[in-house]
Image (cartoon, rainbow, N blue to C red; front, side, top):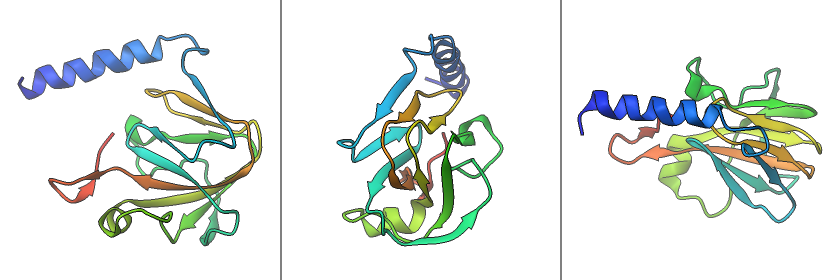
Length: 142
C-alpha cells in the first residue's frame, strides 16, 4: 500500500470516528481502570503521591498543534510536568515517552477529535506516557 492510500484511509477512519454519536465515543474511567489508551497516549493511574513537577496552566496533555496533539482535559483538573514514569515501564519508553502528569476530579473529560472521549468517574492522579516508535526511537505521531 502506498503512502497516499494509507493517508486517505486514515482520513476516512477519522471522519467516521467523528461522525459517531456521543454515546458511542464515550468511555468511563473508574477506580478499577489502571491504564487506558487514547491514540498515541497511554494514561496510567498512579499513586496520589506520585512525583510531579511544576503545575502548568494548560488543558492540553500532549504537546503540538496538529489534530493529533489535541488531547484536551475539560473539567476540574491540574496538569504538572511529568518527572517519573509509572512503575514497571521500560527505561527506554520512560526516556522517550514521559509526558505530563495530572490530577482529576469526577466528571473531568479527556477529549480528542479523532478518538474516544474518557469521562473520569473517579478522582486521582494520572501519568501520561507517549507511545514510542521503536524504529526511530522517537515519540509516535498520532
